[in-house]
Image 1 (cartoon, rainbow, N blue to C red):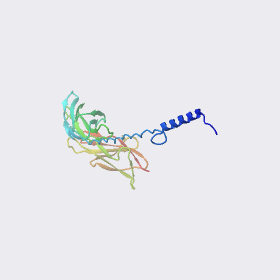
Image 2 (cartoon, rainbow, N blue to C red):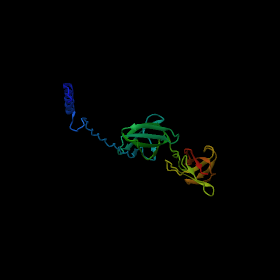
Image 3 (cartoon, one colour):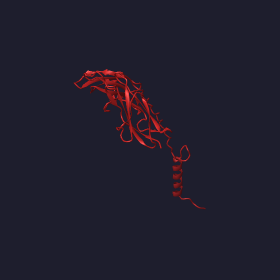
Image 4 (cartoon, rainbow, N blue to C red):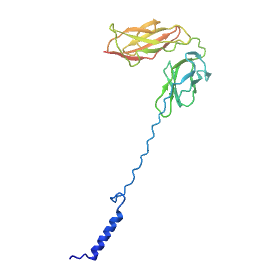
Length: 252
């Protein structure tokens, strides 16, 4: 009969004890950490877009805006508007309608701004509403006024506004080979206006296509697949003003 040594018996007992001590509640002896609960992501904050500002001063189409005399050639004006919903700042854009020079003031936190401008000039102005946290903006209508000049009794017309074709537009030539130009004009003194229309393939500065017309639209001959330039001069019989020059293309 085979005898078991004391050493073998001891080793067996030690192994049995180690297995017994390492046994866990899950039966495999492996401790598993609990799965962490994920932190919920908060929903994105939606910032409402601002609305358009309502313009107040200078008044629209005012003939003789005087402001405060700043020098022999300049006056200081107060530009003012009504606060727009959701807006936190405003950009004020003032355009000299005669020279097309632009004066721009960005990020105005209030609803007014004093600006010094050249006398005896027509101006157009507009306010852009902005809001912190969004790239969306809103533009007000454009208002016009004439800043009074010393000793001026009759003011030149506001520069004619070209309506159609717009700059960069593509237009169709009719079956009889014509397109229609349209524009609008205003005179600060209320004088009747006549118009001279220029349209050519070079620069809009060549011989006029029509002169001394009282309508604000004109049908003119045009070739297909051609780039044209056009502008309009308005006159009150004493003074005159030119529009900008627009370029357009006729389709093929």
